[in-house]
Amino acid sequence: MSNQTLIARIEDGLERFQSREISASEFAEIVRENGRSLEAVPYNLIKDIESLAHGFDIEQWYEEDGFVQELEPILRQTRAWLAMLPRIV
Image 1 (cartoon, rainbow, N blue to C red):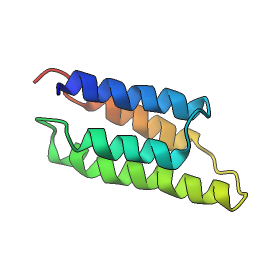
Image 2: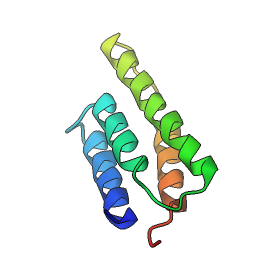
Image 3: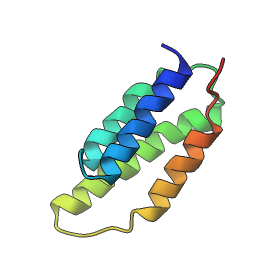
Image 4: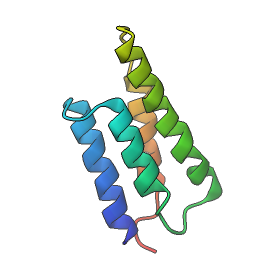
């Protein structure tokens, strides 16, 4: 599967998360599954896959406990990560 397709899946998942169609943990799984399949990704961006996914897992835990966490920092970080990914390899 091409990087463009995998990145599109992550971007679609991000949109669905922001519109509350899916939970934070569901989006974390989308990041993990598709991010691990990307090709020709620099090591620092590979490390970010688990870090980002974990951030969304934590968001899910906060939500389940009835707390509201500021999402903009992790959303901004996710968008920046997506922008750095190699789309054509």
